Image (tube, rainbow over all chains, first blue to last red):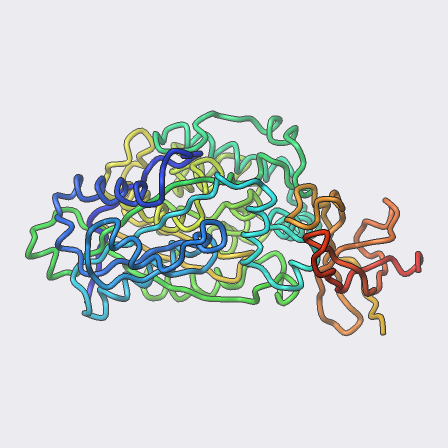
Length: 384
Length: 85
């Protein structure tokens, strides 16, 4: 049984105060359908990735909520795994196709966050951490700052190297019409931005965002019958977990869930890290992209910061290009939508429809979506 | 009974969650306890020079916060430098 992405689209990401979750979902699905000539009646199930609708908006039961909003009365499920909710929803959708249960499914990621004040968002996001961390007054910038400090001590990673992740991702976002921040920035601007949780500064952190992303998956038979051109095949979709809190980790400078899920994914896809052309990775904080580059096997431990600083993963420079969407940092991070947006970006790149940010001859792509400070990792590998 | 340990990583929380606004900025530290386990906690009763890797700390039972003036007062474990005991 094979599964492929056959349509994908995102809304604008940003401060969308005038937009409801329903209207964002309708727009994302509408755009995906328009580009693919599919009809919504062909969708047999809906998988929704979302984290905060209950805590912030008082709305749960999102499967039926979006089935009604989209006027598609089919089996519908909400999948929650903190900031990996979108990636997990995609994984569940893929399993729905691989199992033979469904021939075509919609994966929808959606989040509304910007109507709330920073302290409320920080509190809601800490739902992804451990009780010990909540009692400590920890925040996600704080937890990743603890990781960053250890990475700096152990490998000599610098604040300039971390800043260069944000500089690269803002450059990529400047080429993405849907991105929240389309302005280019410099290393000095990152270093001079207000401190959030030392050593992380404002411009090391992904923003609070609203947005939605939609992907339609089809089975091999569905694709053949509908004569769909250029499907992007899912070669592997793997998930793994680790302790919720940092204090339960074996290693602080490695996200073990990424390492384990990536190992399974590379094995299943029959692909080596050196064969990946493009990757969308979870740069919730600049240090997280450095960890991802190392944990996914693209660079040895301690080498990724220097490579990113040299521009090796920037569009037009090297073999592997990372976060062409602008990543979480600059495209924006509506948490439940992020994992689905990553798939949309890889889908468009592999179809050759990524516009000004197109990576030439991109054939194999990877997405890495993280929940919490590394407690959940979702790795997908795609090829045309 | 207090457990002691050493700071292995630290940061300063400048943008706090709800209920911690009045304490910010405050240090968040990761400690390797004498039991071999790690613990994440807030550092209290400290001087600026205590916020560094290797400093010996111990657990202490403290008030965490009270979300509302009439609400339940929450207590829990924090950390303080051993030499400031």
